[in-house]
Amino acid sequence: MTKGIILAAGKGTRLDPFTISRPKHLIPIAGAPLIEHIINTLKENGINEIIIVINYMGELIKSYLGDGSKFSIKINYVEQKTLEGTAHALYSCRDLINNESFIAIYGDIVFHPSIISTLLSSYNEKYFGVILGVHVKNIKDFGLLITDGEFLTKIEEKPDVNESGIINGGMYIFKPEIFKFIEKTEKSIRGEIELTSSINMAIKENKKFLIVKSEEDKWIDVGKPWDILDANKLLMDVKVNKKIIHGDVEDGVHINGNVVIEKNAKILSGTYIEGPVWISSGCRVGPNCYIRPYTYLCKNVRVGNACEIKNSIIMEDTNISHLSYIGDSVIGAKCNIGAGTIIANLKFNESTVKVKIKGEKIDSGKRKLGAFIGDNVKTGINVSINPGVKIGPNCWIAPNTFVYKDVPKNSFLTQKFEIELKEK
Image (tube, rainbow, N blue to C red; front, side, top):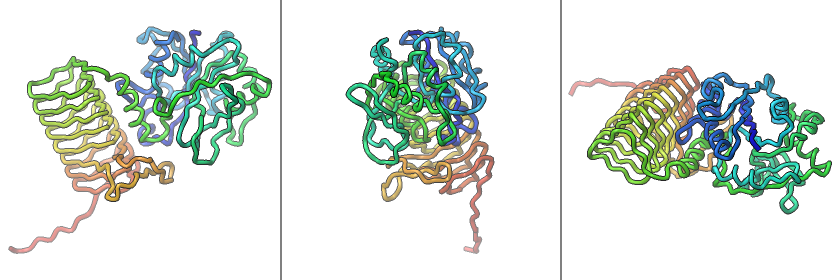
């Protein structure tokens, strides 16, 4: 098997503010955009021709990945002109498959690299397909796999219950005959041609789908902002497994644990780095900073004197000014975080942090969670930001402002103070 399909057409609106200015598949995680991790893992397992289905900001994906030559593979692109579901997206690739079995992956999942090799090694021509099943604590919002032993009997779409079970992991191996079932699949009540419906139709005609199971700690559906941090942690544990230091590290820097410090990065004296940490090319950190585990600094990030950053992703060309604290947060590209900016990541009552997504407060399930800040945001000095707050791209936050709720894109947020001047 040498061909793979990545479905990367979706908008990812629940990942705002980051998907306002990029497709979710280009969100940086553990050293590379999400989709690049998928491509590298496919390549490592012998898949050398990849078809990527694109729509939303597809030109950015094409511009970044190119024809695949920089990965020593071939990449073709298919545009899904109307977003009519996963089966519709897969069907758009039929002319490039050439009657071969193939692997198909949703482009917004992050997984341990061993999962693909297990899936591929499990495939046998006597099966119509292989499907990844992930054991999760809460099956709500996922497709539930109903099984008989090792084999699938039905996929039940998004049951409204809170219980554990095996869900559809968004990774498949199919025979090319799957396209015949897609042709016969009618639109769901959501108005989409669902791949799960095509699979259920095939099962009714006695086609066998083997289920390969994985645990939840090896797989993440990156659908909500805090999933970005979980995905980063999963892949950092895999990829940052030793000290790789190509940058300039001054005397007086202490490094504890595994790190990647890329060429042309500079770490100034007095800085303490506790791995796993990834510091990209062009970064400048310090002096006297504390960089804590699961921090990923993208290219050309500047971190000023006496800053602390913990379990956060800071995207390219962003400046974190001196005396700031960034915890359990994701900050977009080309931001300027003013001196003394503090992002709180723990509530007084230590309850889990809720985040507003598409108008609804969603419980993240996390006791510690910071803020999600879009591209081109500027904060003045001494800004304080509450846990779970989202700030849209192109915003200005005035000095001494307390940000306690979401800020929509292109806003200028100020806080009025009364100042009284008296004689001594």
